[in-house]
Amino acid sequence: MISVEGLRKVYRQGGGRTAREVVALDDVTLTVPKGEIFGILGRSGAGKSTLIRCLNLLERPTAGRVVVGGQDLTALDATALRQQRRRIGMVFQHFHLLQSRTVADNVAVPLEILGQDRAQRRRRVAELLDLVGLADRADAYPGQLSGGQKQRVGIARALAAEPDVLLSDEATSALDGETTAAILDLLRDVNARLGVTILMITHEMPVVKAICGSAALLEGGRLVEHGRLADLAADPASALGRALLPARAPMPQGAGAGVLAELTFVDPLAATPLLGLLARELSVAVTLLGGGVELIGGRRVGRFQVGLKGGGSATDPAPILSFLNTHGVRAVLL
Amino acid sequence: MNPEDWGELVSLVAGATAETLYMVGLSGLLAVGIGLPLGVALFVIAPKGLTPWPRLHAVLGGVVNAGRSLPFVVLLIAAIPLTRLIVGTSLGSSAAVVPLTLGAIPFFARIAEAALREVDPGRVEAVVSMGGTLRHLILMVLLPEALPALVAGITLTAVVLVSFSAMAGVVGGGGLGDLAIRYGYQRFNTQVMIATVVVLIGLVQGLQSAGDWLARRVAHKR
Image (cartoon, rainbow over all chains, first blue to last red; front, side, top):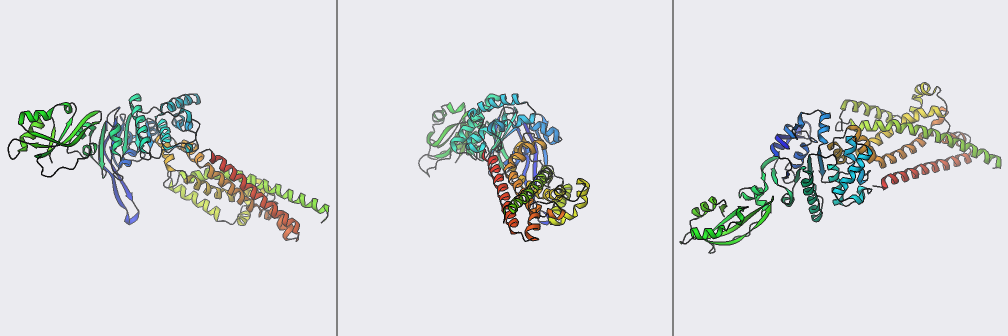
């Protein structure tokens, strides 16, 4: 649904002789399948905002292509670009509602742009306010709403023109924890009911963990990794995966637990009685030191820290690791 | 002072007040009608505006600055040929409306431009992201969102016009300022002087209060 190829954005900072170039995005390539909820994570300054603003060309890339719904946006003239933008909804961190309009009239803005008549607009606005649970605040002004309510209006407005894609620019970052959870539920619900592809940028891992099926990590303007959430979590080398699973408990030093290792399982393996198998087949005593199982991207992923001790005086970890690896468990020594 | 003089004073001041209101009202309407589009244009075509057009922006900005740099009394005289062309005569209240309007247009244009600049660019961008055209941006975002500031600007312009109109006597425009100069200054008529000052203060107070009330009303709902 969204495909970004070789995206590059360079800003010129300052002017005259002191002008210097700042590379905000460097060769970003990314594909988001239809119906996906895709999260882009990064610290502030990593280029997240620039990236999402390039996806509807609020920011024009220096180089590269942005293809949304089969249409290369960078190749369009102003009129055609406006037409395409009407198929891409956007939700903002600071809502950006019009203070001069009521809730209902704010939601109606994209419909007015589409040229719908009053009766059509009224019907659609009522549907949307129902969807986001704000039917009773239709005549309120944005100034009278809480942050969470404002974001619901923002989401209703973004969905008004029945877009194929919803871009969410830190939509929950200005909200408290409880409100964030409610807004994420709404986005998940919208994705499931309407099949809208959602691309969200955020600096909060819990947001990605809560609703995204796939994610990417942006660092210094470069996409350092991306993939399905469960796959990332299962990969011990993945920085995103590390952040997805609970932090490692402090390991005991030199105690009698043997060789220390970290094992990562993904469904359906998480259910396999593998540790018992290890003890039976290789006569290895397994000591559980820490870890847990979490539901990530709809799949269960487990990561455990264990001590492995063979029969002899010094345990050779190599056969144990290869045994685990052949059974689909990713094992690394600590 | 006898009753006859009182009657004459009242009719003098009432007539002058009517002339002032006529000049301020008509030139104010015209100045807002022309200055608002000019202010919107200045905002929109600015080098970092919605549709940048730096050359035209520089020209328009220059014209507006030139208009603002003329002392009003100079504009009043300099505009006489134009006044004659438009009104047919260079004398009277209607003739004074031309220089008043010319003086207030650049003033209000700058005020309108500043009011639009105060609109959160994020709200403009939100409507850009929906595929809104320039017309949508102006009519749905810029003007409604800036309305309280624009109302305050209109009030300010009206007050400035009251002050400008005091010089209309130079072209026989009449009005309160003219009355004060002719009777209060040239004929040492203190009563007329005092009455004029009182009415002027009352007029400006009234304009300001009405403007504040309206600005509060349009901002209140938000």
